[in-house]
Image (cartoon, rainbow, N blue to C red; front, side):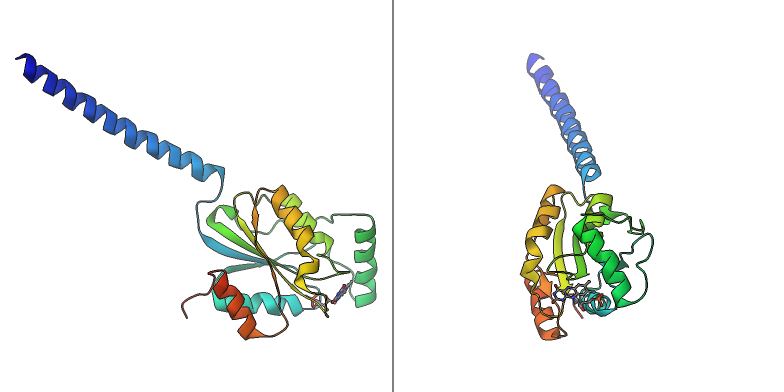
Length: 197
Ligand SMILES: Cc1cc2nc3c(=O)[nH]c(=O)nc-3n(C[C@H](O)[C@H](O)[C@H](O)COP(=O)(O)O)c2cc1C
């Protein structure tokens, strides 16, 4: 009789422990997903004034099938190269982070965010600072890309690294797109971002 009882106790304890384990694990998972990303999709966020970075972003979208969104200043820059260059120069000299449109999708579904921009004065435009002010990229992997007349990607990397790390994001070396699609494909492959087409 005594032996019977202890078997029963053992079974009850084991059952309760199993429930606790499953329940405990489950709530742990929920907490983890609430804290940062739970999806593994890639988002392309790009800023472009004269369309070159837009083309780069669209080419990346073609190869990755990632979601894509254009970053925009809340008040658009004035039209014409000299006019927007003057405003942008002022932002740069005074460290102004211009207000942006909050048009990004919910970031929970993304684990990787590719951030594209034209290189301006060897640096990312100030709207990229605004992007990191407005959105939290904690736990995500940031992969920058740029277009420029000649300045290499690495010129903007210290700034990008600082912005990403301040957010608790991981940063990868970026890519300067110059219409060389073979190089782009290699870069995307290296980062595990190519789709299967
Ligand atoms: C205000 C301004 C500053 C620029 N500074 C640089 C630079 O430092 N180095 C460079 O190689 N190109 C520079 N460029 C050229 C742009 O990076 C290049 O034309 C870029 O592809 C434009 O991208 P978008 O068409 O997406 O705006 C500059 C262009 C502008 C308008």
